[in-house]
Length: 306
Figure 1 (cartoon, rainbow, N blue to C red):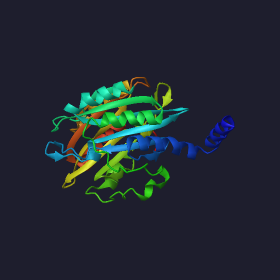
Figure 2 (figure 1 turned 30 degrees about the vertical axis):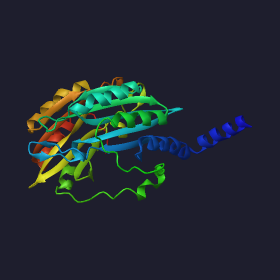
Figure 3 (figure 1 turned 90 degrees about the vertical axis):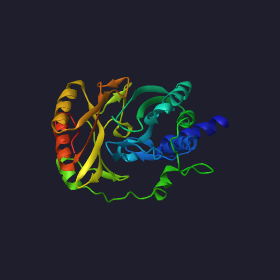
Figure 4 (figure 1 turned 90 degrees about the horizontal axis):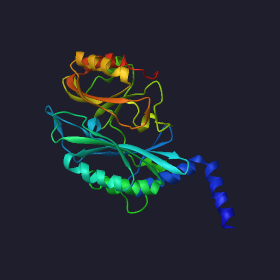
């Protein structure tokens, strides 16, 4: 009877992928004690913005949505779940978090800066792991708990299923002091407002892979361009270009021609195909001018069609 019950449960899960997805989504939300969001490509993504940090750069107070957003993206792998993510940490938080991740079997794939001259300094730790949803969530919760990252949204019991989350998430503020239509026209892409920042994602033409598995946009494979208004038509910009080796230096030259600083160049993954380099940038200038410079850089990249 127990075998028949097990077979029936597996058959039900396979015939109802939404129910099957909700099961491991629930395990992650329960283990992290933080709800996530279902994203395209079968990704369950949890955002952990560092709202506790007050970081300034060149006189600009950085909003979490501009450059202080930790995130974790989960994807089903048969009987297991894979996680990739990027954790924003202060200098003193790096090694306590790293130690707990390693003890729990989660790999560190990169550790680096994104910004220059920021105070306090922030580091960015990229992680990769696979295993049961419950174990991954528990390890990540304990590791991130070694930092001061605010989780928020905790409940006394089990978090609500993903299907009911939309009613509990506050609506995004749709007003921003930027000519977003001009930015869209310059970049050839339409962005969205999030946390007082105008965000534009540009996927590459090919879907990157890591360890032979496709890495969708929601797992960090897209070019990210963020604009934070600083008044009088100006904006602070940052983000990262996702580049193959032959694209790196043409993009550097295009950015420098518009006065956009290149602040970091590094990997995010260890076994990616094609080999990818992530280039971070910074400027605070006329938003239209910066958008034109970013578009000139994008013209050197094999990006997906709009």
